[in-house]
Image (cartoon, rainbow, N blue to C red; front, side, top):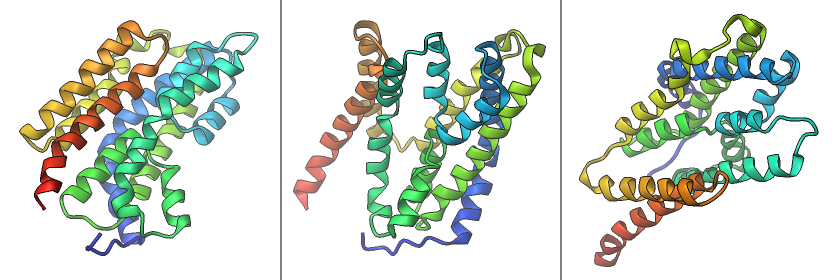
Length: 235
């Protein structure tokens, strides 16, 4: 990439601050996750450790649905792998900016990559930002909110038996709607987004398991790449 990409503390700070509004929603559904861990028989220490080491909200929620005795380890591993394969595509989208960084800066930041701060980082780069520390800073904000919310929810125990009664279950959906609005670049996004939605809906209806997440991602990515192919040919 022609433009120099930096990685420093100012970028980390900017990413952390930019992500603070989103951490409100992250805390809300992290709190719900903490509540559900108690109902699944997972103690606070293990719940917090899961959120800190796995750090993958959607996969953790799915894991709770499968948390029975005896624990289906093979099914758990396969399901969470399928759900998180989208991170391969997300990481590939960041390579034009992260490819020139040191392995420690690039891969260390990737541990803190979530759907939320990836979207914020992509928007930052599309607007001309060139400090790769933004991903790490925004990821740290999400990490702190997610882990602390898990601890708070687990500690609350049975105080809230039905999170949906308080609208907490909608927090996850609300934050992604807001992120989509922020990523919208115009009419050229319509076809990839529709393709992703249609492919995911069809896969959810006809393909067992959580493959619809990966299938929808691949469909949208393929259409987006196809749309940009003529522009490359013209050059």
